[in-house]
Structure formats: C-alpha cells, structure tokens
View 1 (cartoon, helix red, strand yellow):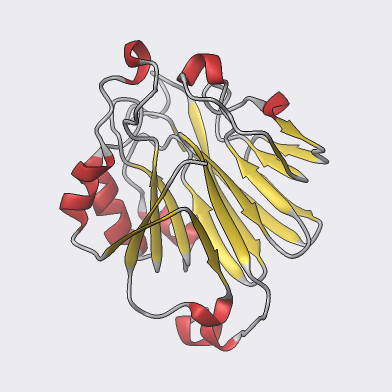
View 2 (spheres, one colour; view 1 turned 90 degrees about the vertical axis):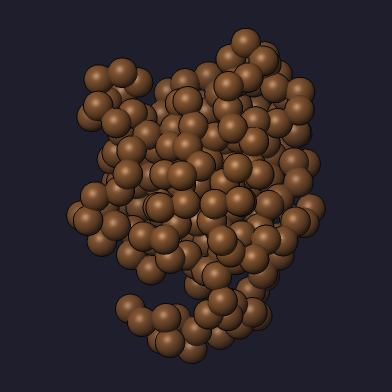
Length: 229
C-alpha cells in the first residue's frame, strides 16, 4: 500500500503513545489500549507506572519484558508470532531473534505490528540482529517504529540507525537505552540515547506523550524521544 493511499485515509481519532520506560509503551486508541513489554521494577530498577490495557504484548520471556501482573484489566496477553484481532486492534507477530546467532545465546524475539485507528506501529522488542529482506517485507510500510538502541542485549546505536534507514518509518521512537535509576549491574553498559541520535541524522523532538491522528502525518521523517511516565 502506498504512502499516498495511507494518507488519504483520514480519521478524527487520536492515538496516544506513552512511554512507561525501558521497552514498555502504552498505545491508546479509540476502542482499546495495548501495553508493550511491561517490566519487573525489581529487575530494571525503575518503578513501573500503574497502568491498564485490554491487550499486553510480550516480545520474549525475560523479566524486563514480561511483567504481565503490572498491567490491570487485561483481556488478552500475546506472547508470540501470529495474527490477532482484539477490540478493533489488529496485531501481527513476526518471529526474530534476541541475538545475532539465531537465538543460540538469548533465544527468540517477536516483532509486533499494530494497526490502531489507521496508524501502523511497529515494536521491535529486544531485536538482536539486522533485518533480513524477508522481515523488512513483512514489516512493510511503517508509520511509527519503536526500536532498541542501547546495545549489549539488543542492536546498538549504529545498527539501530541502519535499521531505521531500511524501514523508513515516519516517526522513530528509541527505547531500551541507558537511563537514570536503572540497575547498574544489569544495564550499566547500555548506550545512552544520545549516541543513536548523533548517528541517525534526522530531526529530533522531545515530548512527554505523542498524540497523533492519521491526517497529521507528513512525509518528513523524524525521531521523537518520549519522557518516561
């Protein structure tokens, strides 16, 4: 589907994206909300905000990504590849790996594609390798890309920048980077988000929450750094 066709699908609904920290976001549409990769605060070192959502997606079964009990009023937990439709939200999970050794070190990872109120969002989870042409084709046209940039356990700043150039999302939101308050013993070696920002070469905006509707997208690519709730 062409970008021109996508931009022709105008909608009055506003989708909100709130950053809960680490790799966790809340995507709130008109009919339902989705929380990605909720984390155990004891593992990460950051308080996990009180939140609720109809759907929770888990990219892989590690404590900093599968704290399901941290989200209330959940109707459906998705923890692997497949095609799902819940409360007007379309979700597709694509199987990938948590490392660049085909999962030999850290196992598998799931990329999720969400269609919410006409907006196509992609969450890469703890992706540990570059994208093959087949995976790029499966991901397809992307409005908003949530990508790990910290390295060590995922792709690092340089690989993340390369992936953004491959996918060409209209909006890129970095995640899984070094942040104040994290457990230093576990996440102290992560790269700060600034390393990615220095490499990507795109306009950068910082904000508390992203609220956007279909008609507000432009062809200009940019990076949005969200403040943790």
